[in-house]
Length: 465
Image (cartoon, rainbow, N blue to C red; front, side, top):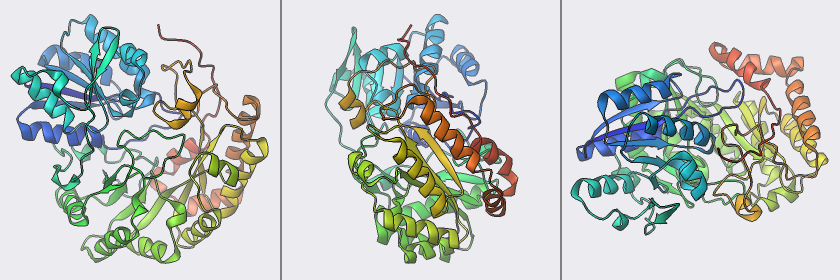
C-alpha cells in the first residue's frame, strides 16, 4: 500500500467568492506521508476548475491505493457526486474523508459521501498510522482517531489526543502544490497587495466555544514556536520571493506576548512583508500598543470577527466580546490605514430585526470598510446544531449565504432586505472612496464584485438522493 491521492474539492462558494488559500491541511499531510515513505499526489479544486475530471483521469492513469478528500461542510455535495463517479469507473480502494466536513458529519452524511474511513480531527498522526496498518495487516480498529465504515454505520476507534508539539511537524509540502501556483490569484480575503503571497498557520485550536462554530482542530490553544514560524517564513521568502503573508489562524492574538514577539521579529527581518489576517482575531484583545506594533510589522488588512454587536446575543452565542474595546480597536486600526472587513452574521436564535440592523449600523459606524455578511447555519459539530437536532439540508446547494434555515425572529424576506441594504450602503461615495484609497488596486475589482454578491436564500429541504 504505497500510493495516495489527496484532493481538496471545489465546493459551493457564495456568488463571486472565488478566493483561494493554500490547502495547508493537505500539504501538512503530504509532507508527513512523503517523509514516511509513501508516494503522494494532490489536486486542489480551488485552482483547478477541472478538478473532478482530473481526479477521475488521475485514478485511471496512476491507480492510487487510497483516495482521500479534505472536506469542509460546503464540500459535502460535490464529494458525494465525485465519489459515485469514482466507484462507477471501477475504483475499488478505500475512500477517506478528513476535515471538519467529514469529522462532524452524521453517519447518513458520511454514507452519502461514500466514505469508507473518516479521519477525525487532525490527520497527520491518525492517517499515517492507518496507512501503516493497511500495509502491515494490523487491525484498523486499533488505530485511534478514526470512524470506520461498518455496515450502515461507522465504528469509532479510541479518541486520539491533539498534537501537542506542533514544531515536530514538517513544514507544509511546497513541492506537490508549489506556492507559485497561487501567485496572482484572489487570496482568502479576495485580494492581494503583493501577487507573491502565501498562507501560514502558526497556531491550532480555539479556546473560545462559540455556539455556531465547529473546530476540527479541537478546543484550546496550541502554538508553534516563533523560531519555527520564522524558519518557515524565511523558506518562503528565499525560495519563492513571497511578499505577502496571510496568517490563517483561528485566533492568532490569544497570547499577547507571543503576538508581540512575532511582530518584533518581523520588524527586525531583512525583508519587509505585507501582513494580512483574513481569518480570525479576538478584537477586544487588541489594545493600542499591540495595534501600533502590528502596523509597524506590516499589517495591511484584517478580518474583524464581530458577528453581532448585541450584548444579549454575544452572551447567548458564548462569544462575549467587550464591545467598547472592539470599537476602540476598529478606530485605532483605521488610523493606521488598515483595511477592515467586519464579519457579520444574521439569523441567530431569537435575534430581532432591531439587533440585526444595529450590528450592521455599528460595523459601519466604527469604521469597517466592508462586510463579510453571512447567514447563521447550524453547522454539524457546533453546539448550535446539537441543540437543534436533525435538520434536512440539501448539501449540494449549501453555502454560508444560501439557506432557508432561519432561527431568528425576523422573516427570511426581512433578512434578505437587511442584507441588500447593507450592500447598497457600501456604495456611498465616502465609503467607496475610503475603499479605493485603502484597498490594493490590483485586486479592487474582485473585492467590489464580492461586496455586491448574492444574499438570496434558497430552500434547502431535500434529503439525499
